[in-house]
Image (cartoon, rainbow, N blue to C red; front, side):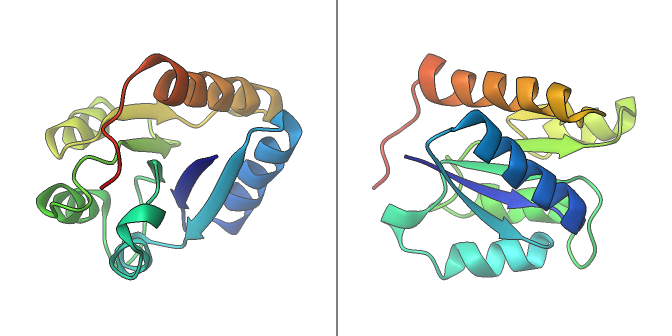
Amino acid sequence: MINILMVDDDEDDRLLFEDVIKETSLLCQLHNAVDGQDMFDKLQATSNAELPDLILLDLNMPRMDVREALEKIKSDPRLRLIPVVILTTSNAETDIIKSYDCGASSYIPKPVTFDELTEKIIALTDYWFDVVRLPDKK
């Protein structure tokens, strides 16, 4: 079972992502956080065995922006190996560069339609859980 933490302040985006997970029948446990601070609080309260396999992080959030969130994740020995994928509406080159500079594993512009989002999520989970080899959780 894939354990994904989706961090997005837009409730509609979180619900849409849940619908995609149901539609694709991915064996996935989805957790949500509403911003970077909520994400970090939840990660700190999670045991090593229950840490997410993948974090989907929106670029523009209140309380803690993507730069701060990535810095906290990448500086924490428990969290730094978790792939963090930026999933955002921005196609700005400066946002892409900033995200990779801060340690993002991937950067994906949010698709416009449900079908496009479904295709992206299938490709994303195939890549991270069938193609690459991630470290075992400790």
